[in-house]
Amino acid sequence: MPAIASVSARQVLDCLGRPILEVDVVTDTGHRGRGAAPTGQSVGMHEAVVLRDGDPEHYGGRGVHRAAENVTRVIGPALVGRDVAEQRAIDTVMLELDGSERKARLGGNALYSTSIACLRAAAAAAGRPVYEHLARGPLTTLPVPTFNIVNGGRSGRLVQAFNEFILVPSGATTVAEAVEIGVVVFERLAAVIERWTDAPAGVAPSYGYRAPSSDPRVVLELMREAADECGMADLVTFALDCASSEMYDPVDDTYELDGRRVRRDELIETTRDLVDDFGLLFVEDLLDENDWDGFVEAKRTLGATLVLGDDLVVTDVARLERAVALDAVDGFLLKPNQVGTITEALDTFDLASRHGLVTVPSGRSGGVVDDIVMDLSLGLQVPFQKNGAPRSGERIEKLNFLLRAADAVPSARLADLGALRRSRAALR
Ligand code: PGA
Ligand code: ZN
Image 1 (cartoon, protein in one colour):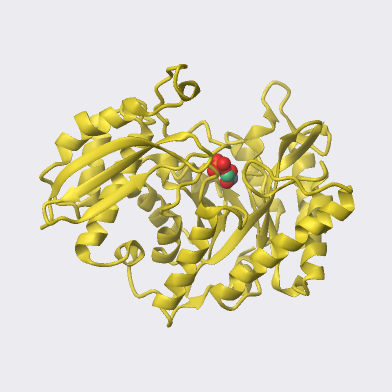
Image 2 (cartoon, helix red, strand yellow; image 1 turned 45 degrees about the horizontal axis):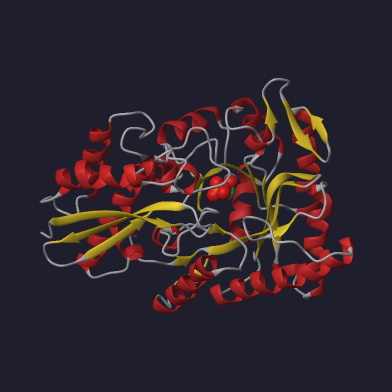
């Protein structure tokens, strides 16, 4: 049995230049694993706490040296000597050491980075890629990569309430084709936006184009135009991540929408029209992260379009259980750092699978180059997963990873999203 011999930690940077924690685990057999926690920009209030130093002298208080110390002084000594393949036992030790509800004591970043480092070391010791290590059987399908190509939010005076406009290469039959569709349409969209606004297409903080309009319909139309001009209209579908917690005002119970404050019902109605006109594959976080009734209503209203919970579920098994009991979602976003350990994240995946829900692994906007998202997407055999725009090293690397995996597992086929949609429609 390869036992954990050492656990070390340091502060490095995420791909937005913000401090993050990186952990290295080495086994007594000389196998190594590294883990680093990405961070988001639309971070749910129920996510595991990212422990930061709060020292304004360094990185505006965002340093993570305290979390690093928790790894080397508290977590490491408790893990040394343990079987690195016993992931559940490792994660349980860390959860017990922390003892708080949202990993506030040792830091969700400390637990997550260590958890991933152990997973990688275990896969290395077993002599196989992480996705094979995670797989529960032979790999038969490859996930369709989707691309967040237009980013909303506040940009000067323009407010686009919906956070992400996503391109889905739903008609692709291979990974290579899906990647090419994503890249080509993304490139073309710059020209389409420029023509429409008479100004260069701006780059948003998540590396997509800045939404050129406060009206979500306009953005989707421009995306459709770009796909059309590429001769790829039949090969793509679109999807939305509204990230509505960012735009919800609990004081008067309203949401932002195209320059107005609207009630939940109007938000759902407007989205239903978009779903009807654009055949959206999924709508993520249409409502605030605590608006359970709103999700139930949305799921009832949006037909075959998948209603997904991200900030609602935060990869947490108890929150997904509640969503299942209420029939509030068709699936959830799998971002293991939201919950803290890989074991908890996989438990949430298992619950989703038992209930026929879709799991959508997703990178985060504050990404890391060697994110675990593609390993999860491949290993767990999900139909599709979510990326940023095809721009910047850490985002392109995920696509390259998928291209290499497609080569390594030639018998696996790209997941059929048409079949997924038909099967959801049949359930309604
Ligand atoms: P992130 O969010 O910036 O928090 O990673 C993207 C999302 O809401 O899916
Ligand atoms: Zn989201």
